Length: 198
Ligand code: ZN
Image 1 (cartoon, rainbow, N blue to C red):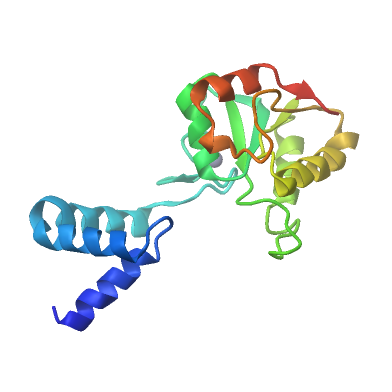
Image 2 (cartoon, protein in one colour):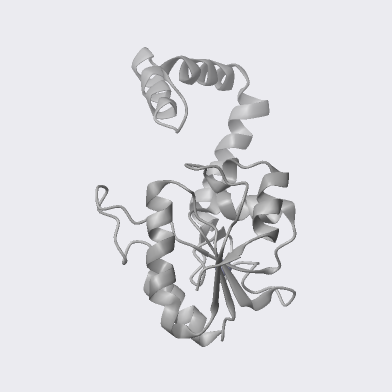
């Protein structure tokens, strides 16, 4: 490995979310000093991730199978869909373990600035699922950021004519709060006391 290649490695690592150049240097050095214990297993995991992990065709969750293990589980209530922004929010709900329905992962929120519109967040897919699965309740578990609230509002309006219950997370979610940053008790309380909006 030449000096240049080490630089390339550090550069790649520094592009990961939340890492600056200094952390990237530390990680690169750590991996190079621990090839067997850390670098090799990491390479294997990354290879598996690239080859085997895909988005669920129904809910957009990530898994090694599609439909994902949540969508295909007989234990999950197919009449309920919880709409979340990204997979880390889905994981937050799974961690607290009190929701037994299905999810729809939007992959973002509506944002004119970032050019994210209806097609990007797959609202048509959500409508189709509501229809096909005869869904009774849609829980909007989006951030309390401006974009998150706008997205909730737009989805609620779109679903208004479908004659289903649309709820959103209630108290406890601070303004500007992102769902996956909430501690378990707060998320639990917000979920239990969700409010009907349609
Ligand atoms: Zn799925």
